[in-house]
Picture (cartoon, rainbow, N blue to C red):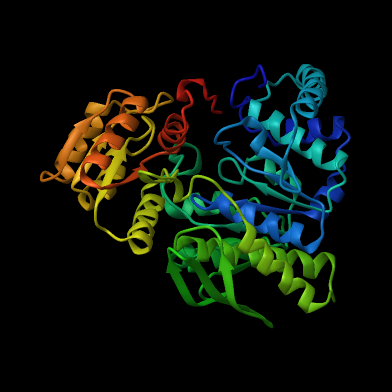
Length: 438
């Protein structure tokens, strides 16, 4: 979209502040209306559910997420509607002109993600949003979302990712993500961060940030996961909601749902206190029940029955697999697997392969690791499995369909975001090589 490198020159906060100022972004208002979502897995689902609650409450709601799955416009939405091509082109020209001026004045190169973040801020401001949900790109300390100064943020989960930027320990990674929160704010930590609680309490002490932990400070009880639907009980402070229905599949969505609800309650208490409790509960129920977020244990076909998952870290992949088997059963599955070349392919394959008797190994057009390399890892992880290698996503779709039809089997596509989305595109008759990721 932008004729810029993905990342700019070094740390971006000073030039980002200059860009937002030059664009006329009201940062005080942006801070007042915004919450920020960070984490290793679950950011998109959490952000979508939180924005859905805001819409159901009657707020004009902006949502900024990354990456997109099928269209670039997915990243910027107002009230669930993607930014249209004309608005995107108009704002792009405006942002590019200001970037040229600020870059020349400061002597620094901007990155494309910074430009996109600024464009989203501009769109939300022009659209008159009352509530905005921003998903961080990488980390939080130096991500553009830190410029928001949000007082309500979260870390959905923590896993080893982008270690060259965030650090090579979970403590370093979760600390970086925590820094998206403004001093004196509140950070909601997902369930898998509980083991880092002692570190996080001390880390946040000096900045006066209040850490809250799912399962400790925010209760999840009576969680039910089934193909017919999911629901759970939620309790935080005096808020006690029973049988909250969750539209998104997977046991991990209870964590994400509870975070989304808590973020909204914290924001509402600060921004619009003393609102009727029944109105708040109604919005929460509708936001969770109606939320849609493609790619996470998404059923894309009934014939053959096909589920895709965009998880791309080992922990996220393990959680999704456990939920798949719990919801749909463990029998009669074909695994279509691949991984991006810059991810932990060996660990990803090792987490998936032992649970499947039939495995088709392939490579996405975008950043896909060599299919033969994936097959070798699968053979090591599950020597008894029947292995096939598909040279392309299109071939993998044909081969999986043939095998599924011949043996009355179901198809699970997992291992990486690009793999899952390209497979879904090809299965629907599209051309995965025409997709543009960023």
